[in-house]
Image (cartoon, rainbow, N blue to C red; front, side):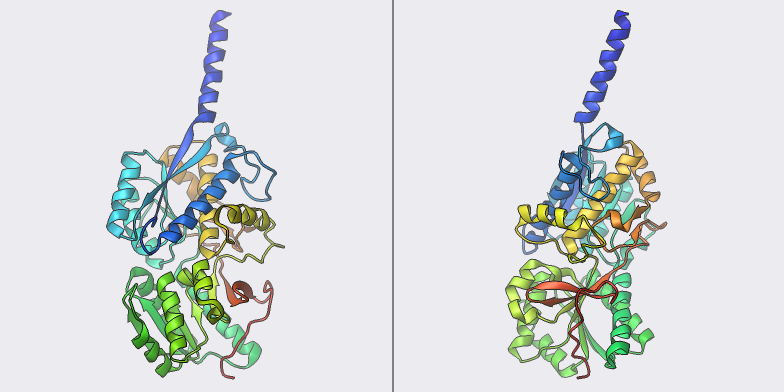
Length: 409
């Protein structure tokens, strides 16, 4: 009888230990330098989803929204360890290796820029640890035959297809089609991939590219580039830029009296600092997005999750931070379904992911990965800025307001 009591005590202690253990995940973001605000916001977004999963709270209508830890892992908590890549791909590589070998994380997440995602994913592949690209959009990231790479959000080809679908639909609706575009993109994997797919889809749509401008990221001046854009005078300017360059472009255009119709590849144009820095100059700017803050009817978890994010960051969720939340949610769900913190078990669970879109805060059809690790159910929306905020304008059946469309008028 005594042996039975001891065995039961040991078993109970084991359950207690399992409940108390944290499941370690490594997050790699720019926490210093000119993109540090991205990292600060990512910390807030990841912290919100971690709190939703780990703590006891009123139930939120989404996957893992009941709280109290991972249900199939004795209520185990996820703990995210952040590292600073300083927007440097080689620092990202080093930090990924450190997190795996010294911090013993079971998975990696990050990293905003596609250039850093490229090196992080190589390390993850070498050490056979899952890497969840949370907000990286270059198509080439999922075209390298990697087995440990996963991405919940759309890539730029999917995003750009949404833009050209919008051009076709709005042209038919208004009688003012897009005939010409100017491409404006930074000299990085993000900029190159974005411009390549834009050129391909423009050709397929019979739209002429009248300016193809590659510029140096974080340039001190974009005056010459603004003059080239003005001279080309395209129906739509399509920039692929991060925050500081997006701000500089708007100011440079304004200084020469140029106010084009803009369809942005999100990135810097989605950031709150862009909206506050350029003020009313941003009115009318359109962007693709994987998130719609105003889609509360179809995504009932948005108000509660956004309120939690506002409490941490003093701003609303945007295209980038919402993607970070859903990526953490998806990874945590895989860990829970695996019932294990072994990387190989987590990877196997990720390949079997099938999350309905209404169990997230995103206007996705759902989350389901193909053999490349890309979510095939990722569906973008088109939004437009008015009154200092983005509002959904396409698809028309979920739009909250009509587009302001000045092309051909």
